[in-house]
Amino acid sequence: MAQDREKLLEVKDLQKHFRVGRNKIVKAVDGVSFDIFKGETFGLVGESGSGKSTTGRTIIRLYEATGGEVKFDGEDVHGKKSKDELLKFNRKMQMIFQDPSSSLNPRMTVLDIIAEGLDVHKLVKSEEERKARVEELLEVVGLNKEHATRFPHEFSGGQRQRIGIARALAVDPEFIIADEPISALDVSIQAQVVNLLKKLQKERGLTYLFIAHDLSMVKYISDRIGVMYLGNLVELADSDELYKNPLHPYTKSLLSAIPLPDPEYERSRVRHAYDPSVHDTSEEPEFREVAPKHWVRCTKKEFEQYKDELNNK
Image 1: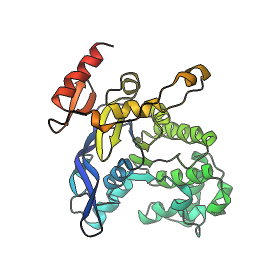
Image 2: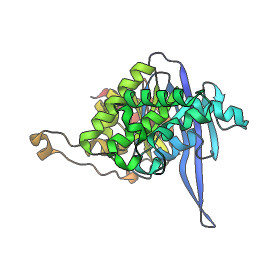
Image 3: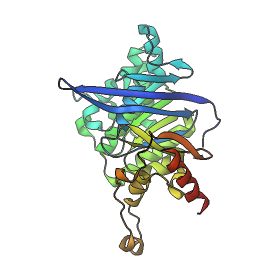
């Protein structure tokens, strides 16, 4: 769990809209709010198109926000910043990307890929120190220092993702956004990468935003989980609580799709398709705290229904 309750990241009413063609606006993220505390892993889940990756990319300023506010360590992320201020911010917050194949420059050696951050932030004073630092990072992520002279195509998908993790660690960040870091990997490799992230978090005091569509893996790594649907956060709770007492129909739908290594359970497992028409349309839904630290996007009528559902369990 979080080492303390000090907020590291505050996201308030974040919006990111894209113009498609002349007249169409796509509201990829439309009023999302959550906090992330120092030392914790906050999982953000949802199907493709839910807006979870856009949320991560907007937080780190790969996209400029359409509206809302992002504060990191109390400082406004999207305010006007000088080049030096942006460099300082980029050192504190790093990103691990979904596809290690496309996020690593095929023309650069592993040494130069990992050392990019060291060069940009002027963190080493000589070629020898640069090489030594990269070799140390390679060993930290479970690779060999001899790998430094090779190119990305010479590695497996899991190894390439480890290179991406080493690149993110190079500048000693406080916060890492992991944007579906295991979805492009074989199932046998996914657990290895997640265990590496957990180990690094413990050793370095890192804070993670872990974005994924696989709820089972998110539960394994996350302290708290937020569920996104069509640009909105629809439910947020501690990891165990969300699995034990899902309330929003969309969350229940996602959970019902998770297979378990139990043939008897699998024979009787019922998948629940999410039907948006089940919701009360008499008023605009709001994010409400149905139980301590368990939030659901709902109307007042649904709020009472969800409370009754919890009380009757």
